[in-house]
Amino acid sequence: MIIREGTLAEAVEVLHKIDELAQKESLEALKKRIGDKPSLVLVADLDGELCGVKIGYQLDDDCFYSWLGGVTKSGRRRGIAQALLHAQERWVAKHGYTSLRVKSRNCFAGMLCLLLNNHYQVEHLEKKDTLDQYRLHFVKKITPAD
Image (cartoon, rainbow, N blue to C red):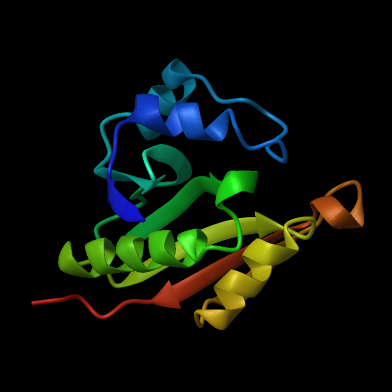
């Protein structure tokens, strides 16, 4: 498995392979959301197939937001989500951020477990129409790398 910086076009390719994502993002929508903010796109390549993605951007000088990501069915249970998370944390630390924020939904139990197992803490619960769509807001303190 190779985790590397990727392009938004590669991110769209991976996102379109993830059935659980209700909204299929377009390249234009991703570019609009990120704008001119400092950002990071990571992709996971497993035997020549892109099977994971993690996209984030700067919220402010101290905080980075892990916005969107996932792993395809063929890439699951292989440590890809964990590897993407670690790569993002290293990049965030290297770039001097002191916190990393992420949101997830109750219906994504695997992501919730991944975040809790990696010492992210719930700081807010956003109620929605149904319990499975409730959003949990997580934060993790990051020690900037020298």
